[in-house]
Structures are given as structure tokens and as C-alpha cells.
Image 1 (cartoon, rainbow, N blue to C red):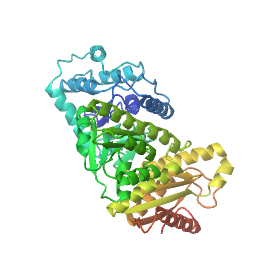
Image 2: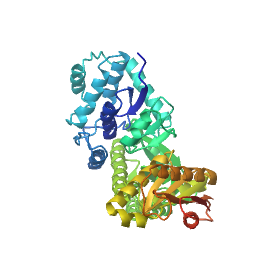
Image 3: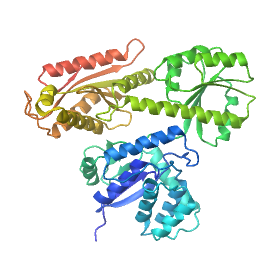
Image 4: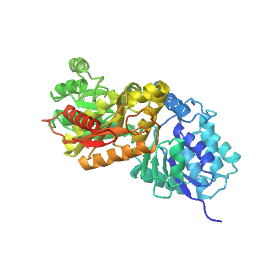
Length: 500
């Protein structure tokens, strides 16, 4: 009997999208062999003390699964548990080549996402293993090595640290939870791209602390107490303010050395910029100073710490402040997602363009922008009705997002029937090639448009602009250039790409 095609999946038991994928694969991939490599997407998840923010995010992800996979039965569990022990059980079953392995995997997923059980509890896992007919021996080094290998492949590969992620054995790779029309061609190897994107869990790996100043020794004891929970980055005040702002935008917590007077203008600057105003700031010094503490709080810092405090206190406050950023980002994310298409909205585009512009100034790499407009959309909306118009916009948005090949690329809804794509480290030729591919993929949808004054299907026009960013230019100029190119595409008869 010929061997079934192999599908490799990287996923975390505490991810609702991974659970939904597991359920769908049981229906749509019966003719495939599924190898599930269990990873820890959230290595510090702890079911014993979930924060309000963590539960809010979990609830939002479950709601997204219900919307995208209404056939999948799912509840919101009491907490998102750690999955290290469950992964070891899965590794033990694989090393033993146990026939009950797929059943065990399904039981673990369903125990959490249908019954709300704590799958970090060894008693729960032993019961599920027994139900699957597995005889799990004492867990040892072999299981540790296998789960470590899975984690290493996923963490260092081109997966953008997303779960779920899949490889189909034909050279294809899919990141995120796919819609059914994209899942089936992927499983069968009928794809052109090696990466397709879908919705996935928010990436929450080690939280990053940026310490600016020379007295970093005061912070390190707290990090040692955290046992690898945080990653430390260090900079100093000699760097340009805009460069420091870019570094701060990528951190979960910024700690400013209060012994240097330059912490004051930097604190004010970080509070003024949209890309950093949600980042919590701590001012620290060797000794407690009540006057400096009052001043730091008035400048916008959220806390003041000093060297006389116990490292355990530092750690507790650091955890709380890092969670503050997570909460602020979650609320901000909800405000920056377009309700119709579930892709980023105009506000998130403005924010992303500002961040990528700063990055491009630092790197010297080109930054490109696409402006996309659905051709003759008013006629479509008037002729078919607003409900059909909304569905047309959703399909175009999903296709644009699915065509983007890199995790760094950004696609958003600019407004109405207009969309934008921000392409870091992409020159004019690369941006034009992507624009042509998006245009072709929209055509391939074959959405009827009998009210069009041109093609009888839905098409798009695109303007492309590419700049080498500098402090003498602004992202607004890049946007205007792309908009001008879009206007020329419309004037040229639509369904085409024009480059500024």
C-alpha cells in the first residue's frame, strides 16, 4: 500500500486556532498522514494565575475561531495552561510509535477546548493517555530531546513564530489558520507560493526589556529571579532620539537610568510618539529619591525603582508593567482592526507606516507602498446591493492578505474599497511584481460584475511607490506618490499596475 502524503504541523495545545485546525484536518485530511510537532508558543503560560488581560485576549481568540470555523465546537477555558508536560506525553507516544497517538492528541485538545480541563495537570494527562490506549513510561531525556528539537526547528525556521504552521511535503508552507478554500489546495500541493498566511495566535515569547543608560547592574538581579522570563537589551543616551524610539517600540518595558539627565527629554519623547506611548516606562536609580520619583511620574513614567529594593519586588513590578503593555496592545488592536474584513484598518496602517519608515531610515533599505482600489465598485455596490458589496470587499481583502509572502509585509484597509500594502526591504521591481500577482489573484476569483464598464469581473487598480527613507523625506510623500500612481492606473483604463 502506498504511503499517505505527509503533513507536518507545528502547534501548541493552548492555541484555539491549533485546536480548530486539528478538528478540520480530521475531516479534510483523512487521506494524509499528520505529524504534529508540539511546540510552546507561550512558554510562560500559567493556568494558576491568569491576568484579566490574558483572559480577555483568550476570549477574543475563541470568538475569532467561532466566526472563522463555526462548525468547530469550542468554549473559552478558565485559563490558558502551560503545555510543556502535554508535549512530553506526545513525544513519548511518538517515540513508542503508539497507534493511539492521534487519538491522544485529539483528546488533549478537546479536554481543554471543549471541557475546560487543565491539561498541565499530570493526572488529567494520564487519564487521557489511558483512554487513548497509551502506556506512557516515565518521562526522561529522550522526550526532552524530541520536544527540544521540535521547538528548535519551529523557533529558528521561517515560521514567524506563528502557530499553527504547516508543511505539506510538496515544498509548501502555510502560516496561521487557513480558510477551507485555501486548506484543500495546500494539502494537495496545488499552490504557487511557499508561504500562505492566515489568522494565528498573537506571538508572546519572552518579554523584552530595554535598559537605556549605563547602570544596568541594578536591573540584572530581577532578571535572574525571573529565570529567563525576560530578554534584556541595552542602549545608551548617546544614540539619536529617533533610534531610541524605534528600539523602545519593540520592547515590552523601557527602563531609564535616572542618574543621567538625558532620561527626561527621552521620557517625554516616548510619551509623545504614537508608536511608543503605550510602552511602560520605569525610571531607576541607585538610591531612593522622592523628588526624582515625583518628577519621573510627572514626565510619564509608570513606576520608579531603586537599588535598595528586593529583586523579588523588582520582578513582581516588572511582570505587572509588562502585562500593562499587553493589555494596552490588546485594546489598541481591537481599535485598529477593520470590522468588516478583519484586517488592519487605516489607523493601524498609519502606525505601521511610521514604524517601518523609522526602520528604513536606520537600515537604509528601500520601503515600498501599494495603494489598491476595486474598479467600478460603486456600480457593483449599487447593482448587487450592500450585502454583496461587503462580501466582495471581504474576498478582495482576504486575497490580498493571502498573497503577501512575508510576515513583515502589511496589508490593511485604507477606507471604502481601497487597500494599502506596506513592504519593508522591497525595491520598486519587487513591489511591482507583488502588485501584479495580487491583481492576477483578484482576477482569478472570477467575481461577476455585469455593471462594470470594462471587464465583466471584479478587478483592481494599483499604484506603486518605493523610497529610500531619510530624515529629509516623510512617509506622507511615499503615500502621495503611491496615490498618484493609482490615479494614473485608473486613467489608463483600470485593471493595471502603475509605478511612481
